[in-house]
Image 1 (cartoon, helix red, strand yellow):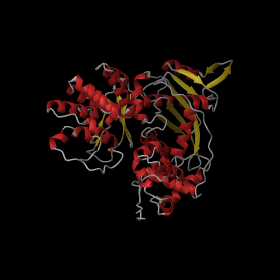
Image 2 (cartoon, helix red, strand yellow):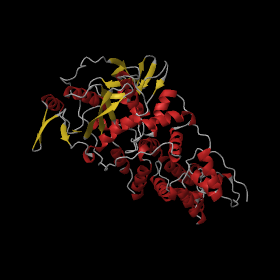
Image 3 (spheres, rainbow, N blue to C red):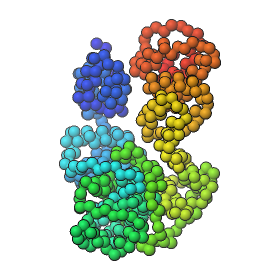
Image 4 (cartoon, one colour):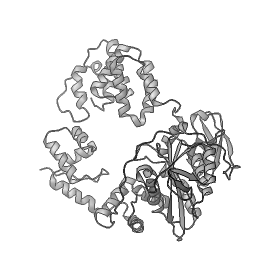
Length: 532
């Protein structure tokens, strides 16, 4: 038997159960692409384990578990984090974020760290904590609801930090603040004003706990608020929903947020005073809490929140605002929608090009506001050093038109039924990046003027399960060039090859043909990754 060379790989180590499933499908003569779909494992991973014997897999598994780990030098720091929180869930992303903040460059990715933490748990060096379970909470509509809750956390000097936390229920954008003393009504109002400003407006409803800071008494369901908070509610025009304390059915998202702040922010950091907490918390909100993909939505909260802003009520001037004379600075966005701050250039949404905006800045962040509404329109981590360009590509996307409206507009372009099927499949496959597909549609469709060729191209794409506008354009070009150059249609011969070209190697001898024969379908093959 030829010797299998086992190489180190960054691929995820699979379980014995997955390995046996791969081998079972392989013995059943399933293609590797089909095995990849069935097991939801990467195609390269499937190929690697298909070539292994049982004994080779076991040797490889032991090698991965015992070899030197890239995060071994940080082992004591990681274990200390878990020792401090034996009964809490600690997110690997928090540990990674903390190590990155403390040490700068790290020896591996967040995924590598996750594998190392799993190794420490499997070997018993980290004890697994028992966690409370929660019922799922229905997804709220944009602009409908923000949830509010409070928590406490002890820091290094033994003092308590009192946590104020809010969460936009639709986009999952988070806001958090802390203070050194228990909350009073004025404190909550002040933090809410900051949260509304941070979110870009006010939702219809605020869900709160039955907390004595806000609630005076409860009398047959009629909830009486403190006078100050009642005035604030009437001033800003939001509704209030008071749920039972620690009720996960109606307040689960916020309770998860408070837990997330404790495990992801506090658990992996040591603070000596309140100022250190505040400075680090602001950066963490931007970089991690709102800057990484949410598991609930599959999207980045800060990006999704930009789409939610039009559904929010505008924030009104408040009699409770202590910093009405907030020190804004004015900047003029250039034609590229860039503003200059301390020698660096930062992007703002494209609609603000050649318009004045307001900014505030501190040691960590640059916050940009609409000059009229004072709503936040952009936020950037402050660049270290001058002459840098800090750009958020989402600022250059069209946000004024809803995707549903764009799809309806495209559907009305052609009347044959396959066109609607193609659009729906395209949206299903590229939902997270559909605006990029819309850009391709704007680019290619005006060039595709022959509706008969479009119909043929769409039917071909559906049959081959090609659902991007780039693939549609390439297919259109094939039918167009076939007619112009009077070349015989060779797709009937090629379709079986195209369907398998990605999933297996073709070893059958290929007949020699002229160059013109192949030029007619080069574009069709290009996206399939085939090699002639």
